[in-house]
Amino acid sequence: MTENTKSDAPNQEALAISQTGALAPLLVLAGITLFAVLGFIENQPPYLPAEGVLAAVPHSPSEFPAIFDQDDSLLGLDGGVGDGGMVAVAGPPFSRNIFPCMDCHGEADLPPNPERRELVDKHANIKLINHDEQHRWCLDCHDLKDRDFLHLAGGEKVPFTESYRLCGQCHGPQYKDWKVGIHGKRTGYWNGAKRYLLCVNCHNPHNPRFASLKPLPPPVRPHFLRAMDRPVGAAAAAAAEPKKKEESHAE
Image (cartoon, rainbow, N blue to C red):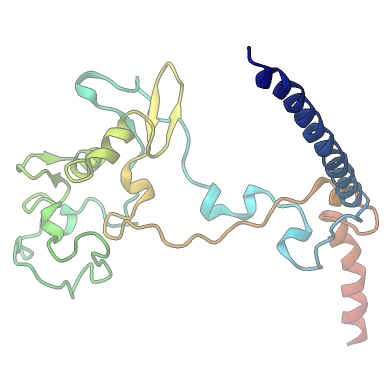
């Protein structure tokens, strides 16, 4: 070891000690600042939403039937994935009083018409939007002769309960994920019978892109529920009832 190397070692140790000493005040300051901020937050009065806003009272799923009243029961579970890869699925969300289709299309005075055209007499409300509407039409999916069935690209008829096979012809990655439970929703048992939601239980087949969702109100914070200076829920309604009666008598 040379004389220069020996003389450099103490200098390097001194430099390391000085750097550590310089960091110590910064760490202490950061700790004091953090505790001050936490103390300030802790001492703030509870947030009280304004009267009349959705966040002012607790809510339950029963207030949002369009969202929570979906059929998620396990009815129809018959073994999950069975022979041939078939799966137990929920019923298709048909429009009311429109199925079986052959109740109308089977009539003698309504022969099949394969001509691409804009529908004006029946089903005029159905429009292909955001679903390759420039190249697709009704009979690309619905069977020409038996409207109670769909058909694959090769002509094979499939029932509406197997519409996922039709969707999977174009949407291969999503179909693969759906079969293993990554895409979509399933109910049932992890090691037993399962029930899958069809693609069309979530996506409108004619306009599959999801529309903008209206957010639900936020949950009521626990410290607001504990606040005693304002009645909440049923108590608020009971407190408001005498005031309403007084106003009605005054009029």
